[in-house]
Image (cartoon, rainbow, N blue to C red; front, top):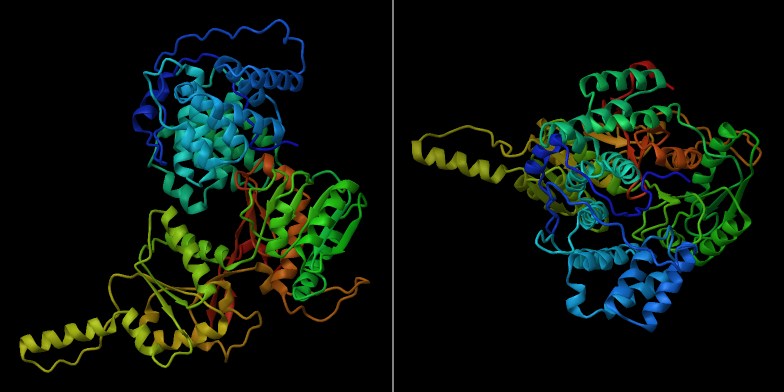
Length: 628
C-alpha cells in the first residue's frame, strides 16, 4: 500500500549544500525541546562500510538475526553497533528483534553510548518501538565536534528530529526541519523523495488558518511549498490542477517541489480503492444501540449509492463490548475482508487500535493509541467543533475571545480543545468563564464576565470627580472582540438572554453544533439570533432513513450520525488514495474531510450556519450547489 509516510532507510552518502539553502540555514528556527543539529557546509565524502564476505549473500532478515546472536554472545561495541544497524535496515523488524537490539544498546558502557552516532542508533531503536520520549532523550543535541558526526549521521539525526516534532504535533518546527533536510538529500534520490513526501504530509497536517499564517513568515521556499499545496487543494478537477500547477511552476521554475508535481497531478481524479468485502462493527444492541443503528443507516445508504457489485457489506453487532469488538475485528482480518468500519465506543476503538494485525480501517472515534498505518479515525465530538471555532475566528481576524462554558465534563473538553487550537495559532482566549446555567446568580456572573461592574465603577468615579450626575449606560469591556458560548441547546438558551440584557450581543457570538437541537423552532430559538455555529451540511437537507428492505421510514432522531455513517463508507473506499495524495479533500454529509497522514486522523471542515429569526440558515453554501 502506498503511503505518505514510508519508513526511512538511512544510507551513507555525501551531499553538497545548494547555494539557495544558505539563507534558509540562517533563518530556520527549530524549537522543540532539544537542539537541532547544525549542518556541515561542505561534508567530506564518507567511506563505504566494508561488508563481511560471509554475510554478503544472506537475506537481510537472516543477516540481522545472525548479527544479533553474535553480538549477544560477544558483546563488543563494534559487534553491537553492527547488529543494531542491521536490524534498523530491515523494512519491518519484529518486536522481538527490536527488543533484543535495544537490550544490546543498553548493555554498552556509558562511554560507548555517548558518541553521536551511537546515540542516534539508540534513538532510532526507541522510535521504531514507538517510545518517542526515550527517542528524544537518547538523540539529545547536535555536537559538531563529535568525530562520529558524519554527514550521514547528521542527516539521519535531523530526520529523526523532524519525526519527533511530527509526533508531538509541532507542525511549524517539523516543516522547518524537513525543509532544512531537503537541501542535503539531493545526492540521495530515494531519501530526497521520501523527505518531500513528508513535507507534503506536514502541509496536510496543518489546519487552514495555520497554513495561512505561514505565508511570509518563513522563507521563499517555504512560501512556495504552501502556495502549491493550497492551489492543488482548491482544484476540483484535473484541468484546474494542471492550470494551477503551470502557474505555480512559472513563478517557481527551480523549486524542489517541481519533482513532485507529476505524481501530484496524476492523483486527479481521486481513485477508489480496490473492491472487496466491507466489515461493519457497530453497537446494535445495548446502551449505544440507537447511535449504532443511525450510523448503520448512513453506511447502508452510501453502500448502495457507491457499490458496483465487487463486495459484500458484512454487519456485526459488538453489543458495545470492547472484547467483542476486538474478537470480531480479528475474525474479519483472518477472513480477509478488504476494509473495516468501526467500532464506535471509545474503549472498543482503543482495543482495536492496539492490534498488530490489521486491515484498512476507519475507526468511528478518536484513540490515544498510536494505531497501525492501515487505521484512520474520524469522529463527531465537541473537540472538533472547538477547533473549528478557533480556526474560523482567527481567519476572521478576531483574536480576543471571551469564552463562556458550562461546568462539567463537556465544558472541560471544549475548553482544552479550544485553548490548544488557539495556542497552535499563537493566540489565547482573553477570559474563560465557567458557569452553572441553572444558578440563581447567572445574570450577575455573566455581567461580571463582560465587564459591567467595572464599567459601572468607571461611571461612578467619573461622576465623583466631576461632581455631576451622569446618566450613562455601562459598556461591555473593550478588550474582547468576540464571544464563544458552548453547551447543550437548553444551556445556551439560558445563557444568551443574559448576554442580551448586558448588551454583549453586539459582539460576534460563536457556538458549537450543540446549540442547535436538530429541528428548527423559531419561537424556542428566537434568543439565539446571530449566533454562528459549525454543523453537518446534511442536517440542513432532508435525510430519509431506510428500513431493512430499503424502504423509506420516519425521519431519524440522530441525523448527524446518519450523515457520519455515509461519510465513513465513502472515506473507507478512498482511504489509500487520499493517504498517498493528502491535498485531496472529500466533501460529505457531516462536512468536508481531509486526512492528516501523520496522525491518521480524518479532520472535518464543517458547514457553517447562523440563527436568523430563530432558525438556522447556511451561510457558506456554494453559489453553484443549489439546495442539494
